[in-house]
Length: 248
Image (cartoon, rainbow, N blue to C red):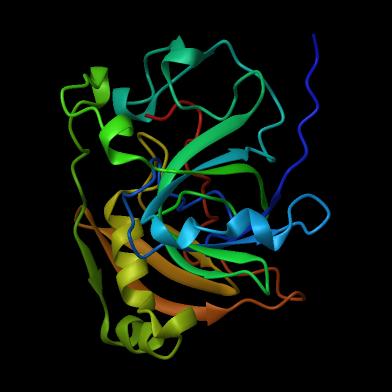
């Protein structure tokens, strides 16, 4: 049996590379994405009534996960123990499908766009479907979470004066604070387990946010506009992709 799935649109996300993407939806409320619907697949009528809901499930394709693994190393287990891929949220799954619950923002039937908040999407992610989050049916308060039963320990995030000023000089769409987005993102430590200390570049849109680990905390030092010719900057070392092998 085979199944042909046609994306309903593409997700334009604030995260321009894998490093920095939250390992779970909802961890970074400031993270934004816009679903641009494909008019060849859906019409504006498909959006009728969506404004009545506050949250939705997004089914999407991990378009940069090109391999399939039967076992992966979940970051929450320190990256040292292997678990079956179906026991994790790893993108390295047979069909490379993801599922995230997000908050709904502005809906524009004319532009065929839907604003989303709190997502964990890479920019350019194909969206397979969008379905309302139904609290009475979808929420399971007594569900068990195995090794991810509690939230991960968050890291402290500080800004140099120059880093804070640079963030303030680059507000996000809608006037949202870049510093807030950066602080929320780095507090969940997007590095691989046992990653080295040093400098990192968090790519937000066309910006490189330069930060490093100092005394066990993140220190944001500067923001640089990335141009096509520059290829970006990497601070004190190359940006290391977040471990997406086996979330949670």
